[in-house]
Length: 208
Image 1: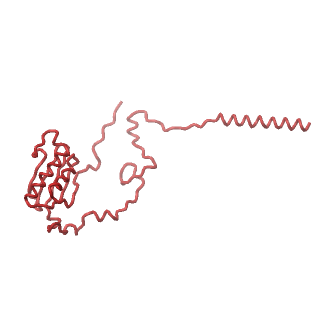
Image 2: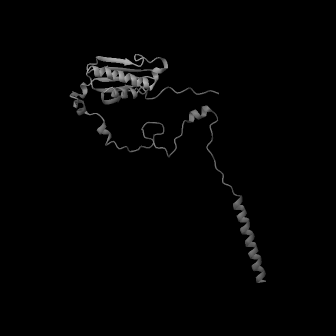
Image 3: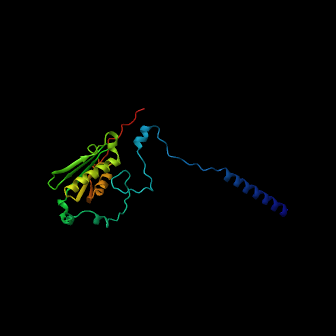
């Protein structure tokens, strides 16, 4: 009797373990996704979501929750100081150097050279150098304009200048390169491009 009872208990135990394994195999994991926006208007109202792994480098932007440490020890040495204005370049103080104003628009490049009293020494543009229509908004036209302005300065005995660039046109940096090609020494390059703080007005919400 004890042997039969042992065999029956063992069979019952095997059946229970088999049924449990089948129940485990029948279980399925359900993943719930984020509810999608019903329309473009709902997506516009929800805005953009910033993931946790993204690190913001500027304060005050969308999703700025974390800040990163930036080493500015070498940056201070590159910025001009009060001593820089008194520094001599080819025997001329920094604040007395002529200034070359470069206006780089998307269709043209304008170059104007003034002295310390803001009196115009010379001025030129891509159109005055012989470029017409679509050829004015090319990098070669900007470099040619810079070379022409540099040659005029060399003929007047001006070898060292400061540069102020305004705009994001194609002749932005090629014009500065043209000045150096003509033999003019560029001491500093200052960017005076105006930037809108809030940017342009966003598009209106699409109504369906």
